[in-house]
Figure (cartoon, rainbow, N blue to C red):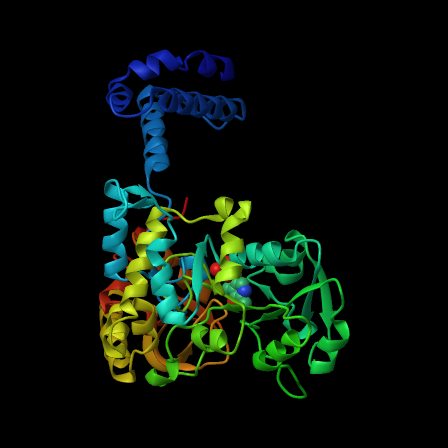
Length: 466
Ligand SMILES: *Cc1c(COP(=O)(O)O)cnc(C)c1O
C-alpha cells in the first residue's frame, strides 16, 4: 500500500503544469514555486511512509503549495495595536512617528534627494549637515552628528576619545539596558580600559580624583535609565565631574543620557527627564541620546558636543560604518522641526508626547467606548470592565514615573489570561495588551481609537496561529 501510494505521487513537473500552479508561476519566482512543490512532496512522502496518508490527490498538493507560497509572501512586519500602555515599547518599535516624519520618509524614499549634495555650492555635501544646525539650536551645543542608535553613539565616542586608554566611571552607573547593551562590554569593544570607581550605591568626588592617572582619557557618566538606586546613596553631579576633569588637564566628560529630552517635561505636568541642553550647559564635552525614545523620532544615536570632539568623531572610520540612511535623516529632520513649535503644538503633533500627556477624561472616554464595543463583540463567557491603572513610559525613560491611565480588563470564565491574550493577538491586526495578576488588560494610553482594540471575530472562528 505504501509503495502504491508513493508511486502514485505526481512529479514536480506535472504539478508545475497544473492549472493552479501555472497561474502562480506567471507572477511568482519560478524557483520559489518549484522548491516549495519539492518540499511539499518530500513531506507527503514522509507521511505516506508513516502510514498517515490514505490517498494521493494532486489537486490538494497543488493547493497546499499555493497556500504555503502565499504565506511566504505575506508581510512579516505587521501593524500591531499597542494596548500595552508602554509608550516606548522596544519590541513594538518604540516611537510612533509623526505624520510630518512619515511624509519626509516618503519623499526621501521615492526619488533622488540632496542627501550629500550641497545645493548652494553645487558640490558634495555632508549628510549630517541636514540636521546639525537643528540639533545645535535645540541643545545649545557647538556641533552635532548622527549615528545608527545610541549604543553606536557611545561606541564611537569612546573609541574616538579613549582608544587604548582608561575610562573612569562610577560602579553605580555600569548599566545593562534591554539585555544587549551592557556598558562594560561597549567600553571593552571601544578599545578602552574600564576604570570603575566607588561602590554600587555610593560614589564620591574623591573616588574619581583618586582614579585619575596618566592613562585616563575621559570621565564617563551614564544615565541609569531603567532603574533607580534609592536609600543610602551618593553620586557626583555632572557639574562637579566637569570641575574635577578641568583640574586634571581638561579631561573631557562624556555623558550617555539614554533617552534625554529636548523639552522640559514638567511643563506638561510630568516628572522631569534630564534635558540635553542642561547637560551641555553644565559642561559635558559630549552628550549622547536616542532618536526613538522620548525624542519621538526614528532610531538614531545623536551626539552633541564641542566642535573639536565632533570633528574628531567625524574622522573616525567607524562613523562611515555607523552612519544613518536618508530615510532616518528625513524623519529625524522633520521630528526635530516639531520642537521649534510652541509646546502645545508639539504635544499634539508628536505622537510620543501626545500619548504621554493624554488626560484622564480622554482615556476614560476611550475605555468606556472600547468596553462597550468589546461587550457586544466578545459574547458569552467573557467579562469586560473598566478600571484605573498605571502605564509606563518604557525604554528606560522615566522609570519611576507613574502615569495614571484607564484599563479595559477582559476575563473569561474558563480561559486563562494568556489564552484571552492569544485571542487578541490572533486578530487580523494583532492587538497586544498586557497581563497582570492573571488578568488580561488593554491600556488605553497607547490606543488611537477604541475600535482598534476590538477583535473582528472571537472564539472558534479566530484564525489559529501557524
Ligand atoms: C537606551 C539606552 C541606550 C541604548 O540606546 P539605543 O538607542 O537603544 O541604542 C544606551 N544608554 C542608555 C543610558 C539608554 O537608556
